[in-house]
Image (cartoon, rainbow, N blue to C red; front, top):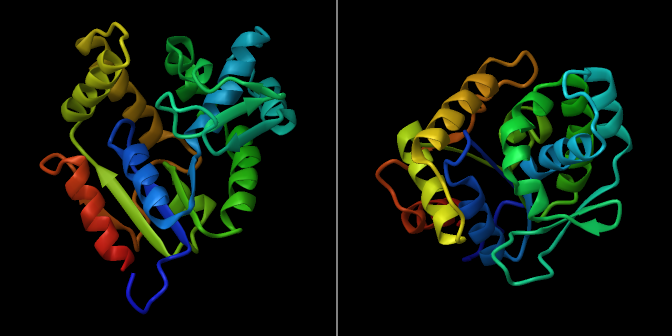
Length: 227
C-alpha cells in the first residue's frame, strides 16, 4: 500500500443495486477489513416483522422491533455466495432476509425515523472500531460523517435492474426484468424522498458513475483512492 495507511473507515453509499455490495466486499477483502452492508439490518427488521405478523404500517411497533431485535452481522461462515452472516436471535437467516417478501417491504420499514435511529446507532458503534467498509444509503451523510473515504456509487435504474436480474438468474432463481425495474424505481423514489436521511451524496463524497464501468474498473479506481 506504499508508505501511507489506507483509510480506516470507508463509506460506500448509493441507490439500490448500484454495485455497492460487490465493491464493498472486494475492498474489505483486499484491505483485510470488516465488510458491513447496513441494508441487511433493515432487511432483518423487516423479516422479523413479517415473521411475527406485525402490521408494517404500525411505525411504533416496528420501531420497538428495531430497538429490541438481536441482530448480529458476522464474517461469512459458509462459502455459498454470502457476503456476511445475518444472525437473528441466534439463527442464521442470511438468505431468508433476501427473500422476495422482504424485498417488497423493506423500503417501508427503512423509511421509519425510529427504525433508522435505532439501527444507525448500532451501525455507528461497529463502524467507529475502524478497519471497516460500510455500505448503505446514509453512511457518509448520517451514520459515519467522519469516514476517511466516502464513495457514492451511482448507475441508471435500467442498468441496476439488469444487474439484479442477472444476479438472481445466476443463483438459479426466476426473475421478471420489468418487475425488477419497477421495484428499483419505486425504491429510488422512497429512498430519495423520505424525511429522515434521504439518499444523497455527502458533500465530500467521490461520486462514481458505474454505468460504463464494470465491477473490476470500479474496484481498481477505489483502490487507487485508498492508496
